[in-house]
Image (cartoon, rainbow, N blue to C red; front, side):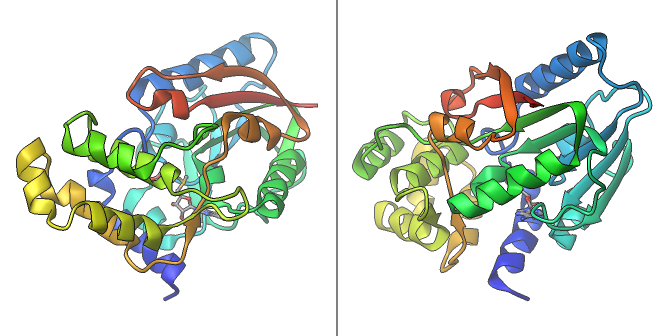
Length: 273
Ligand SMILES: C[S@@+](CC[C@H](N)C(=O)[O-])C[C@H]1O[C@@H](n2cnc3c(N)ncnc32)[C@H](O)[C@@H]1O
């Protein structure tokens, strides 16, 4: 098993401990459902063919238009086996790579993803992903993508750690994302998961003490151990960079949720040019 696939196996095992902002909140899902309803009212396809990049259960199980034929594509069999909500989704999940989607040209009327770009580091991979989405998008399609974006000016790591100990951060996942973004390098570098873990351990040598002080669950805190010694990198574009990924699409709407860190989690609605 490669380090990359092992990372997603562990992610699948601890999925129930992962929460917003890493997973979409109800407000994100309602916004996506509304955009799709509006798109259909304005002439979007009846019984659309839909692509979900990943197996995000909140999206798979949302209120899709009647007759939707959904295909979810994810390269991790453990994520498909452990996280895909087969009974709630109007379709199937297949094992495949977003950079080489197992779908025909111009075949998908709806394309949806949650945080996908954060898993693709480097301009070439972002461009290849957008090209694939554009290739499979049918004329008049709707693309909905939530992004995790870093601020234009990075927060100092010390400020994030200070907020953590002072109880100014609402949950562990918000802290994890703020720390990751504070350590982010150039768009080509992103941030190495092992480096996030190292900074975490330096800031919090004894997680039990933090858990007791903040009243946080130790099993949720322990989700960060999945990053230990892992060379995989995540990338957090700025909001402007995220819009720039949409080559071949026009951004037609943007949703900024009001949960903590929501200003860094925009969902973009896009239409192919
Ligand atoms: C949709 S994303 C983001 C999920 C969630 N927001 C989070 O971070 O926990 C996670 C999924 O992407 C999948 N994935 C990452 N890179 C991929 C690629 N190049 N092709 C297909 N699936 C990929 C992983 O296997 C994982 O199931």
